[in-house]
Length: 144
Image (cartoon, rainbow, N blue to C red):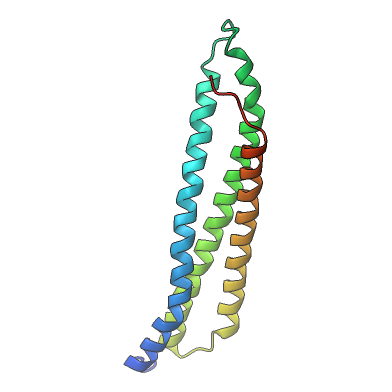
């Protein structure tokens, strides 16, 4: 049997507690958009380089940039993966907050663990992103 419906003050309290995770979720969504944009640029550059004919002696040297682009793409892929893991765990934090208020269940430890998981995933994503940016900026390719 379901407990009594939560009062307006209980729901207001849960909504105020969900504000910080909601802001983090918005930040993660914007960060994922940046990562996908960078991934698209890497893919476009790889397609361009792969279309260079081996007979084109002037631009053929540009193909030496392909292994670096593959490393960058792998790092961005990992960053996207970890950002999505963080987004999913933050979404679960928000859902758990409302469900626990509805069923009057203690949820503090579970929410804290999920929040830690989310922030840790975000940190891992940021580290991969920083590594990718470092490669992109330290080993300039030669555009042809």
